[in-house]
Image (cartoon, rainbow, N blue to C red; front, side, top):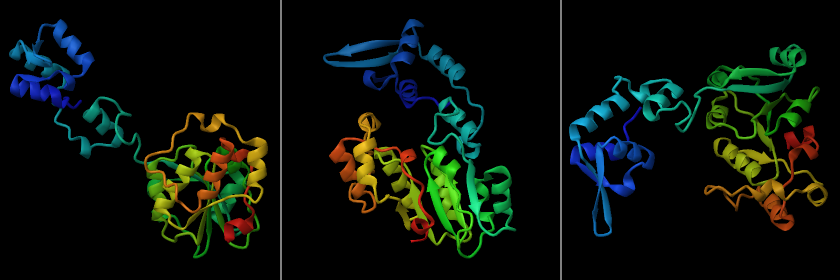
Length: 275
């Protein structure tokens, strides 16, 4: 586990600003009599009351295992760096990429989709994925619409890919590694702030991606829009309110003060995916 920087300052200089200290750790050190609080006017500092004991405590709490976090696997590195496997920016480096493939009858992925209902590869293997020269990609946020997809008989092969409610960055980045990129990319997700942000994250790695907006979306918002979908959602700092794909949905969200779940929207037709 990486030693907090304020403790390093305390050891090196014998004092550190009280505001920099972690309250929980500080309370433990005060109880042990290893540190004390010094007040000078309105300033408070943490001082080392027993430097030798402080070093022993630090060596026991933050031992040097000789491990380099950046050279370890993701979760192992997180433990070495911060003390917990989920403490880093990412908890996994490789994910399962689930999809359905609707192509030629004798195609391996088509047969797998028909036999097992779904196919999958690891995200670090997408670069080795053999694909035809022409194909279309439909990305889907939620499980039920993904489960219902069926584009059998489409004139050009279609991959329907399940992204999940909060697509990991490594999954989105993997979409850039297809040896043969898709001719077109259509995204189908929830029509709320979170859903739109997922689309914008997708568009950053696949700029050609378009947002699926059904012709009857205004009527659907009037009848099925729910305020509680957006009550606890906040627009992310990086959310682009001027994104031309998102503007029609942004206007409906603000007009109705509500969001719309994608499950009430019919799946895109082949013509939507091919346009």
